[in-house]
Length: 153
Image (cartoon, rainbow, N blue to C red; front, side, top):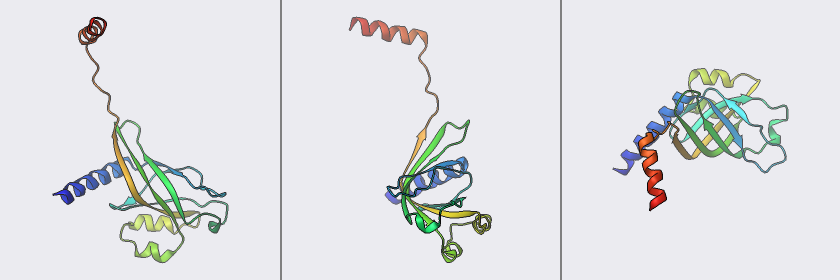
């Protein structure tokens, strides 16, 4: 039963992330050379990892750590929810790993072949779906009643 619940939760999370499609990538490296914050506009994912591309940095790829603590904040204007993901980001330079991945779509593979970008894979460690819908406000009668009761009790 627990595995069905987890499967349902990961399915919901995946559908919400695919609906949002836009994220900010924050890296939390203590290294001297850090990846800057990037806007991510398209992702491919499964239950364990998220793949995307970012513009190739001007520094040599070997100057960066291969494993970087990272956060992804998925959002879309006008939607009443967002998703926060924490995990480990990996800079993927091995074409064989890209070719052997079952997560990556044909369109994403084509994007990853562009020499102006680098592939990033984030292994999901923690993910939160946050409901940001407006809460119903109290009527003036309810508000005044609670105010009066706070004065007298």
